[in-house]
Image (cartoon, rainbow, N blue to C red):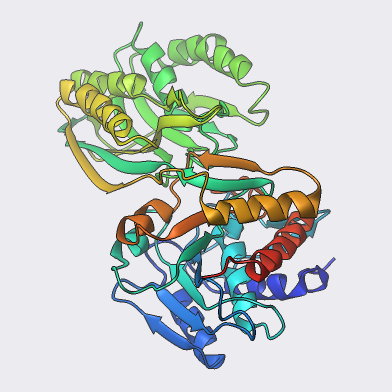
Length: 481
């Protein structure tokens, strides 16, 4: 089946157009121009603010002028991940999509349904002539995935809407009313290098499924950087280890799927045998039920690069073994909600320069600070430098708000079941927007998406149909002013 034949055709048409435009985080110039031109071609008031957010305004349809004004919001950027065996340039190529049963997928890359389906839905409302809605402001933010600089740069007074509909939730039976805040924790240090004194070994961890570092953090998926740290730590038991290089993970908000390290050891054969029969076997058994494609490859290698000293290498390995990764605390107030967590997202050691990127999340600011301080304490004990940046607030739930009650009622009557009203462990932009618009009621919902932030990302077709129908009913039932 071709995408053009899938219902609702208007959404998949706009999603296809959007996915033809490169839109990686921090590099949204092309998609900003695309959305700006889209609004202008419709004859609608279209502006781009100083950070790059696009705002398109559409007047209420007849007989809807007496309803509260709304903001429909989604982010333009996408997480760009691909499988190692896929040749793809996210800066120049459009996403290559295919239909697989009831799912739309990409060919070896992330799909961009997060948050492209939200963007496509808003585009569809803007260009419609037969869908009732009140006064509407479409807010397309930038850089949600790597810093939320679009939401952070949105100034008070730019919006007049009384209700915000965020279309960035990934389960179609959920109505989201709260989210986690986050902070970037970056560990760095520079080390002297020397000629290695041993034999070179290459260690590769690959085949992990990765995933969203917030929404999937509690699922027990493998983290390639943590697995690499475990292997290197075991090597310290009977070897002098010199690190040459480490290349693990990529983006802060993606659970790392792959890691490669070059090391120098006294006896490569003994090291490979010990790891193969010991820690490798243990790790594969631990993750057998959740990471069926995990591979750990260890082999003799060669390298012309210089290595770190044994002492400096040990410090780095101990830090990798000690950094907290995964759930830090479950919420005592909201059932099954992760309150705080950390993702050891990126480890890079190259020519003596070390960089470790973490993303700590929490729905409680004090808990978020506690996670970050734990990372800082461990790293400083090893003489490393720590930087906190990109902090953003969470979104405090208001379950009794009028718009939440409207969505609950519509969902229950329409689908003959109650929705799950939840808070999520991800960085929705609602908390940041709410800081500048405290009187604005907010709610988030969306179609079912699986594997966001990984090349396994896929969007459910029947769920998107359900989401589209739900959206049209919401717009028709926005409360009176």
